[in-house]
View 1 (cartoon, rainbow, N blue to C red):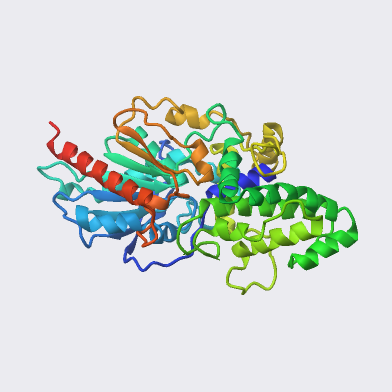
View 2 (view 1 turned 90 degrees about the vertical axis):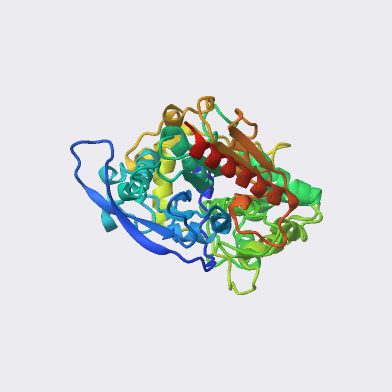
Length: 469
């Protein structure tokens, strides 16, 4: 349960409306792109803006939608909008099947494994191919080459952008894969790297903060050994529902672990509003109250509660601490299923010098049992490597892998350039796909430089495309 919960942290569902203008359209695509016998189709949603597009030679900036409503990613990928005028580009955001409104079987899409079986990255990328073929209408391409397409994506969307370029280079001229943990899989990345990166962010903010979080797990265990201790923690942490048994205590610790990871992912240098409003540099704010890890258990836990309050009650409007999921049912269902089929990302903690969390091993056997019981599927660990090549990317080209080193997912990302055209772009003080977000006066020099570098490569790719013989 712990590892499944944390694997779902790839999902960041945004709730900010930025005011970008777009038209909502739909395209009919097959439910199964790889079968000659399945005639089912459904409506795939996409958002489009052609305000600055030069239809004769302007590129198409294509966002490969990830696990959520496409509007949320549209509103939080301001970089694409900002450079669309400069490049005279068409801006397109394509929704991922089984998320948002793009449900192959409507309200019944999650009913059984036969229907859910079409939820794969391969099918989603094939949807994107169909949409690009449609956008590159033959009537517009008579006598000339079609407009070049550049895929953009962050997190799972960044993985899709890279894989799109790898699998369909004839349709995508280049890809910007931001915070894309394409190597967070068995045999590619140690399972504890994710939490090592998370821990380093807190330790670098404050050594005492890291020590306090490390000590808090034992303090929770000690206090909740008795019923009176559970009542004390319920009252003093202002929980919406009381802690009644060990399962409730475990759920509280899972929630706190997820929260620490989420804060590291969105540790931006300016105020932001995602799962809830957060201040600039939120981890620094969280750590302000955590100044003495040697305090008695209850005093220590109160300092931790004040830190956690920055996340769940920054505005002071929350009446109690709700441990239930912040994600929508469809998003949880969709990603949880994918995490049982393709996206099996081993995550573990050592509970020692490597990280600030309780020790928790990666237990694939238990993981597989959960998946079989819930979805009647048996996960395997090498599907992604077989489909997309794993670490063997020497044959790939025109991909920028950008990673903020404050982002826990950077541990499974491409941090060293593979070749002259498959480049790693590091943002030392950047969090989760910060480079794809809109410009902000508080942006650091490293993210400003990263965006300039991305524009440079897009310019080069366009030049190469136009003048290639």
